[in-house]
Length: 630
Image 1 (cartoon, one colour):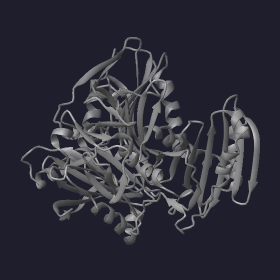
Image 2: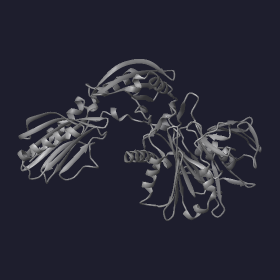
Image 3: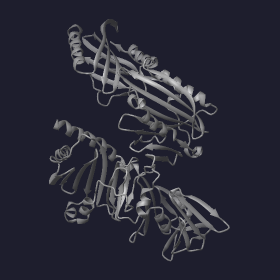
């Protein structure tokens, strides 16, 4: 039992650290760098030619365009008052040409130097504006380089965390939703925060250390489990320096030749809090009392007395507002649901809970002139083409409103043996883009009225303003490109076989050798496997194969539905029709076993049961019919 618990903990943290590995790339980074006198500035990685920045009385003035290019701030100009208004995130700044009085969110502030117009360009004080936008400004005396950096911990949250923490006067930071707090020294930055707040990465501004805080939900893990896991992870690759265990608390300190590490674990109210310190110089770590005071300040308690800067963006309704600023849509996500992004596909995002439910937002271009009913019909036809008609039914369609706009709701029921799930699609059209809010419900959630209503409220909270088409461009739905699938020939000269495969099918990374080859379709729900046994008699082998598959059916998820004597590829063969279960997935498999030229060939044609439509079955049949054995 102890071994099982440790494995569960290991699995939890493997999932977590997989998210952490990509976290550094998730946060948005705004950066401006240049030397005074340069007319080419580096703005967010691109060279931009502008009016040369100038220094007046020690204040660097830059063209207003630099601010708008870097931050995307909204600018309004009042010619009568010669006033520039900048709106960015939750900040509004008003500047007056040739006047040192400025206003930040309505509060008057005296500038060190006034904005000016130079060569018909509005020049504004760089440090004043960018620091009020939450950025840090650095000047290198040796190189004369000015660098402005702002890291947005999560660009999809309604909260600008870097701005909030830069402006805060509070000594502590925490999260009222997850119930934790800790000291927040001024040299600490929040580098990354997951959308649902269960993963936070802090780093000091000098780059000496980082602290990762993650929160996992589990009622079955104990402190002993966590400590056992931590020690087993450390013992072979690191030098263990210290361990502690208390009531609902454990600590492990270890190091390698350069770095020092601390892992601290806390359990409270069914939550695991994992605090991980990475300190980049073990020798400095040994004597750094500040870092110990910071770690010791961590508490699984949030005191709501105004003394803690609250990172939680959960509203009183129990949702987190999610905004995609670039594509200009938003949705209110249930507080404990996690966001899943896909690299390179900004127009798709998933939200998932820990019960198996999910909500997905897809945004695509659509053919001009199509009505909503015509768009929906194409979706229904696609389901008919790609899914097993024995396993789904269209329960209902109805006209609804999304964001005050006409929309269509479709409800499907999918059944596969003892597993049932419901799929709801809501479609709404903009001028250039179609939006699909899709939810996959487990049967238990769908039948629980309160749980279902919460998710429906989430789906119907979707709002959008179409982005500029010239800026965003086409986002094509590849399902409807209408390209006829081409085929290519693959072959083995050694084993003298060949077959035609759809051009999009690729070799399996984990299983593709000489005598055993496997090819899989691009979405992973169909594959063909060919195994060659050299110099083996069919009559000798077939009885062994039947015994193996019969034994497998007793201990695994294999069900042999039928065994037939057939003629295949000009010789006697056995055909097995099999159902294969792997976790929650069910596959239909046809297996052909036959002898040819002193070899035995086993061909496996596999399709996920949900996707076993007539169209997909025909693709597998075509591959089988194309196979040739000399």
